[in-house]
Amino acid sequence: MKPFMPDLVYFEPDALKYPLGQELHEKFSALGTPVKITPSHNRITDLPGSTELEKYRIAKRTLVVGIRKTLKFEPSKPSAEYAIPLATGCMGHCHYCYLQTTLGNRPYIRVYVNLEEIFAQAQKYIDERAPEITRFEAACTSDPVGIEHLTGSLKKAIEFIATQPLGRLRFVTKFAHVDSLLDADHRGHTRFRFSVNADYVINQMEPATSPLSDRIEAAKKVAAAGYPLGFIIAPIMIFDGWEEQYASLIRWLAEALPPDLPDLTFELITHRYTATAKRIIEERYPKTKLAMNEEERKKKWGRYGRVKYVYPDEPMREIKEKIPAWLKASFPNAEISYIT
Image (cartoon, rainbow, N blue to C red; front, side):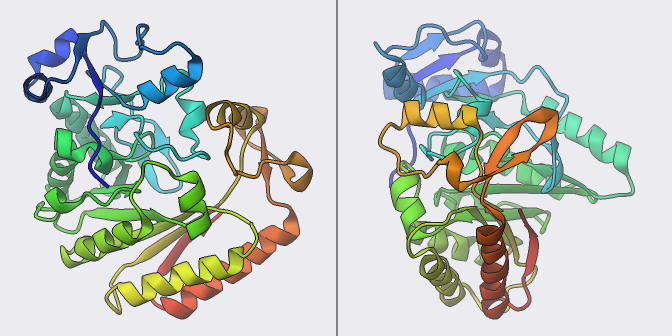
């Protein structure tokens, strides 16, 4: 698939005072992409579209260039200590994505141009936690690889973290456009992770993302470039034939990747949803095949009294027994960081 190009771009006026903001303005002006000015990247009120669904689809093709004013980083457990805010929003249309609810009525893609200020704040967090390692997650609220060909921000973050003896960077992607990152001076401080899943999940519920075969080819390139590599299998779903499809996925990874990859990790996350997420998903993707029947789920209370619907005990036990066992058989030296 071709890399993402927005149909419409907004700029905060102050973003043009930064080199990246100027560069992006020149780039999109030269391409003839419609460019507008907005007082705030957090509030776009004049998106075209006659219905909410049409506005949503247009928003997912809209880029907003702004300044990250809030430099307090959010926590990002269990994968890292902090989320480093390079961007917010994603051009993918994954039906199950938690950004459906967390971004609410702001699903457009925001990129932040005040990178030096963001890196300076990361430096403060590293210094505060010394002599412990501080890990930063760059993909909590976006897929930074999907816009890297436009911004170059992720490569800058990788090379900044490379200079930090006590800093580490992590991110995950569903996109295969990794070539510009292969020559980055990462010094082994950045873990490059790919989100993978069963064919059924990718084909039915991950529109506008790279095919699985392309992600695996990209992973091979990343491994050859010396990055610590990881995979997130998420969300793990139960459907007719799920065991064979997940076993097949793991066999494919084992056949494609170099044997005895050092420091390979897997993170496993089962599907869960909230009532709010279900409502939004069904509004935005009315033909979705995402199974969200509360009668087939178990309630789990999260933080702030929120209720999530997870798989019942027996199906969850099957997942937690079978998938780690298949991984251990194919990747005996890999670490399964967690399964939830």
